[in-house]
Structure formats: structure tokens, C-alpha cells
Image 1 (cartoon, rainbow, N blue to C red):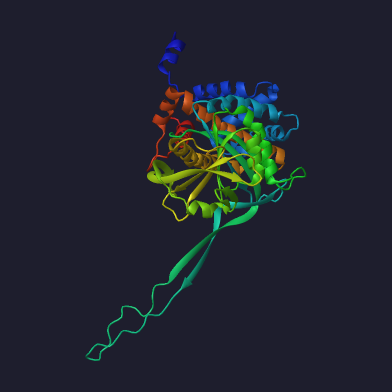
Image 2: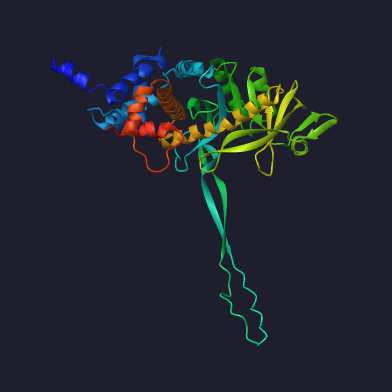
Length: 441
């Protein structure tokens, strides 16, 4: 009777034991078909990543809170992280089957981007390549001064008073991303057009220094072909500049996807009288339609602004079929050019695709969360196989938390009530959710 009464007095949906139980149910789905030892490894990694927020094996071991010595836990995790017998393909397929169904209704947009993991001090890590570390920029400061002209004389002959004979030195800061050793990361997330829901679908590490590496386009192509069968055919894929090459566009057409790609403007297109450079064509168009959209600013805030746009049919050299080009002005000097898989049938559809592309920033939010919340840049293992496995599991841990936000509302509400924040509340509830899980009341 006392045990039953104790259970009734502690029915909190956000209790640590309830969280572990929910995580175990998730692991049973994504680790189905794996060996028992591999299933245990997946659950331990997801639990340690959630509790400690780092891919370091010692931190994951501390999050497990085992009775044995930490060095024994770390040794076991290290052996499992680098083993050749782990079925990574089955784990990835199970996870994509679990989250891919949400692209039918809940999260109808898939944003794709390339990121990086900077390891400037990881000299002994396997297959390190050169990456452009955008998060760590070097600053170059230049100072200059100029003397003021002497004051003019008044009618009485006395010179006017001058506060200072020298101007204050001007400081100019130039920021440039450094090239450092590291790894490239392919990221794909499912997102919602209006709400701040971000669900990582694929977080894959690759290197340009491996023997099987052919080109960056080939790496993107192979991952898109793995991801596409698990995504709803109604979903719209969003790509930034850099994915506008003919190789990637042909892959998207071959997979029969619905896509929106931002163009650089240097490509020639066939329009009306003949070939014309895309940015020159865009600057000469009249933008008769307008729509209010929410865009992201540098301060990670959503602001509402009025956007003027138009859409026209174009033909690209080397790309079959007629495509649609949406040209929009967001109040900047250069106009935004979005190439679509087909010509929008109405201004309303073009406005919908424009809103869809502006949600591509969700993949940036996901990449930042992977580094800040589950610490993919903290990875310290040596082999590329172990690095890829831990980074993939870190993305899955973040995906499980996103599933909690979508489907476990009572549990999430209980956890969020315990999370304490200072200042402005983050747009992504993942930050508050992890704060409540790691620091329970």
C-alpha cells in the first residue's frame, strides 16, 4: 500500500525516470534489428548526450551515472564507437522511417545545407580536411588618423579655438573565415512554415581526404538519394546558394522532388528574346505583387516585412524542362532569385514558395543547436568511423527531443515549467527543454 501511495504522490510526467522510459521506447524503434550490444550502445549514447550535451566519451559516461569506474565505461563506449560490426545503415534507415513520415503533414519542408566541424588541434584524427570555419573569424584592425585643418582667423585676428588637432582614430574591423582542419557535415532538417519546429533528419560527416571521396557534389548526391525515399513526395526541399550547380539540379530532377534553390545570378537563362544573365534579368523586372513574410535577422529575431516579388518561366542551359524563377526584393541592394521545380501557377503559390524558402533558416538553427546542445564539435575519438557514428547519434538525440516537443506536450510542459531562463526566451524550445531535463527541480 505504501508503495502504491508513493507512486500516486509522484505522477510527474517530466520526472527523470519517465524521460528515460520514453527514450527507451524511441531506441526500440530506431535500433530494431541491431544486436543487443549495439542497442545498448545507442541508448547509452543518446542518454549521455541528452544529459551532458557533449560527444566526448567521458562526458557521455558521466551522464550514465554507472557504479563502475569511469575509465571502464569510457573504454566500452570507445570500443563500440569504432567497431566494424555496428550496422550504421540499418540504424539510419530506421531513424529516417520514424521521422520521415512527419513530412506528410506536420513538417512539410526539408531544408538542406552544409556545415563544418572545426578541429584545429586534432592532429591525430583520421582524414582531417580543410574547412572554412565560419564560427571563428579572425579580426584584422586598421587604425588611421588625420589632422584637422587649423582654425580660421576671426576679424580681430585671433584664431578660432579648436577642440582637438587630431581626429579620433577610426578602427576598421575586417572579418574573414579561417581555413582550419576539420570535417564537413551534411545537414537536412524538416521544418514548419509558421512554427519554430526543427527536426534533424540527417547529420552526416564526410571528408575530402578519404580514398573514396570523388567530389562534394557526389557526397551531396549520395545522401540525397538515401534521404529522398523516406520523405513525402509532397514535401518542398529548400536549398541555399551553392546548390545551384547543374549536377545537383539534375539529381533533384532525377529524384522527382519539389524544390526551391536560391541562385547566385551568374547563370545564363533563356527568356523571351534570347539568353540573358540571371541577375541582369532580375534587376530589369517589375515586381507587381507583394506579401508580408517573417524573416530572420542577424540577432536571431523574426521580423515581419513587406516583400515585393514576381515569377516568370525560364529555361536553363543543360537542365531539361521549363522552370520557374521567383524574383523578390527584401529591401536590399541585390534581389533574391529563387529557382523552382516548375513555374508557379499563381501569385499566391509564388508567395507560398517564397515563404517556404525563408524558413530555410531552420537548418542554421539546427546546426547551431547540434554544436551548442549536443556538442558535435567536442568529438575526440580518432577514427573517422567513430566520429561519423557519434555525430549521427548526436543528431538523433536532438531529433528525439524535437519529437517530444511535437507529441509529448504534457511531459514537455512539466519540463519547461522547471527551466529557468535569463533575458529573451529563445525561439527554439529545445534550449529550455534541455535546461529542464539537465537541471530537474
